[in-house]
Amino acid sequence: MGVVNVTPDSFSDGGQWFDAETAIRHGLDLVDEGADLVDVGGESTRPGAARVSLEEELRRVVPVIRGLAAEGVAVSVDTMRAEVAEAAVEAGAILVNDVSGGLADPVMPRVVAATGVPYVVMHWRGHSSDMDSRAIYADVVTEVAEELRKRVDLVLAEGVREEQVILDPGLGFSKHAEHNWALLAGIDRLRELGRPLIIGASRKRFIGRLLADSDGEPRPFSESDDATVAITALAARAGAWCVRVHQVRPNADAVRVAAAWKATERPPKTSTGPERGRSAG
Ligand code: PMM
Figure (cartoon, rainbow, N blue to C red):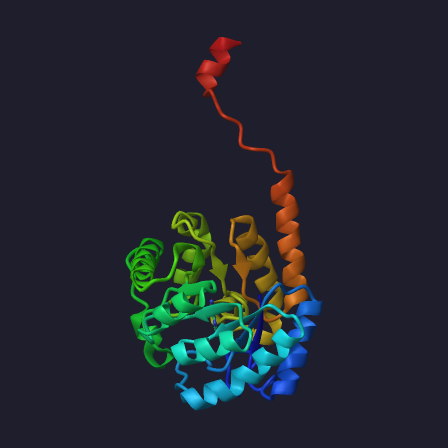
């Protein structure tokens, strides 16, 4: 999944694709680079970000979605608003990516249920304006899994079908660096939720912090893409269904490496245990 943020202020690429024509061209480039899906968003979710109005969000995303869909691109809409999701699907989007998992707009699950398109339910504890204050966990993997399970129950109760649901641990959303690493290392446990998983690590702050220089200065977003590729390979190997990334080509390559690796791996040996093995010999 390649990202097209039609925003002036997104995390790493704010302002770059802010007019519809440039955004559409960028989406097409991402498909050429190997994206199976292009995720179009009109509202920044960077920490501290203020919300945009419904009208402004619609103005940003609908023409881009319509333009990309007309070119045959599989488009997802990154929105927390039911009205935007509905308009996006009408304009040709084939997936709704809701970082709030239906919490920001209680009407969202019903609207998505009516469209029948796949629905990304991400782990979320609150809006970007104060999400960092909610990053409190005793056991982040268990708590995120439990909160996602509850969200799934709620969206199913609103009419979403289980087959529509895709889950996302929401790296960086009310999570500090140690929480993000624990969730990545816990992908196998998140897979036990039984639904496909999306991982969105690309250009997030925890990568810049990992790669900080000797003075502790975090590596800028623009220079953290190689580390994103490493995460992509490991996440794909661990069974993630999709990675949401800003730079598509190297990440698509990493997914193919992981797929080839997995396909040729021998199944683990069923051990009889050293003692039994020896006595049998
Ligand atoms: N991250 C951002 C935006 N949308 N959607 C999903 N499903 N998962 C994410 O991790 C996610 C998302 C924020 O990143 P950006 O502002 O750099 O695009």
